[in-house]
Amino acid sequence: MDKEAAKCTFPPGADASVAFGEPPRASVLTVTPQVSLPACLGRYPYVAAADSSGLLLLCGTHPRSRNCLMASHHVYDAVTGEVFTLPNPPRPMAIYGANIGLIVKGDAGCMVAALQSAPRHGVDTKRAVLLSYKVGECRKWREREIAPCSPPIPSDWFPEGVVSHGGMLWWVDLSHGLLACGPFADQPELLHIPLPAVTDELPADSCGRQRAPRSTRGASGCVKVSGGRLRYVLIHGSLNAPVVSMWMLVASTWCPAWRWEWIHEISMPLAEVWADESYVNTKLPLIIPALAFIHPMDSDSVYFFLGSYIFAVDLQLRKVVGFSEFKMLDPPRRLYRKALLSLCPCMAV
View 1: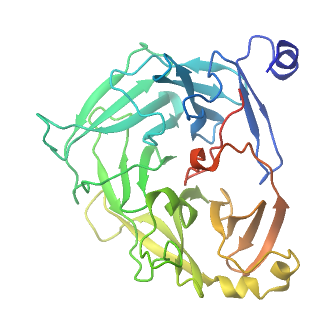
View 2: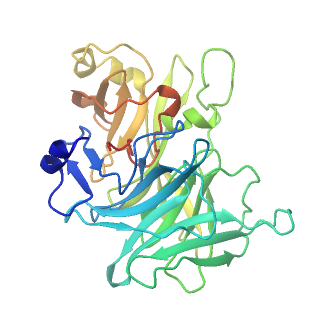
């Protein structure tokens, strides 16, 4: 971006600016080189997490040499335009390690936190390290080791995003479930909540693979806060008879404290939507779409991507209730990153 364009884009003294799109259209976040340089070494800057207060956690990219790239993290207030740059953490973080989240809790303020494994002498201890930074305090990251949880964390756990809800951060692995803890607690406890099991998981493709690779599981599964609850949506079934199901996470009334259970809310065959006039009028093909997100207020409304279109389906009415073409910054497909919890597109720089 040249200097004249920057003057028009950024308010005086600001390092970031958002051009808001009417939901569900995409909004475009543009940042200065102080936040991130353009994509380099095959890596793009991106929005790592978002909070309903309007705060965004940005991950910038900065080349240090021809073969070395450094990541930076910034908290951006989309309401005021302020950007706060975090100091480098004591432990290295992967550029696309989707294990870092953002949480805001009343008077306690804003905290950025990440979960990392805590091996000892090269041996997996099943323990985790909570790496946290409280914005506006001593400008120092805090490391706390957390005891193993039950059920234990699978050895191939791979966080694919982080959700902030109920004063806790929830790390999501669509293959295994959720890890949760309250980062503001003096001695945080780690919880492991497996996802609901289905016997008819959607095949990855028509070539006989029975389990989708991690890189594509976000297209058929989604965990997000909607209607004040954590909800899980999954497309499952067969390629010829796909079904969209939703579960809600609630604190169990019959289990001991800190136990949670998934309550099944609804299942909807996609064929019923395809047969409805509202879908026929879109002229979209009868193809299984990719999950985009759940409406944050209305849990009956689930959004899907298909080609260059985004559309909303009311799971109760079983019809299309919103439809629009969309345009987004489009890096090469192998570099595309879709967060499963909320749409976190690449940033313009």
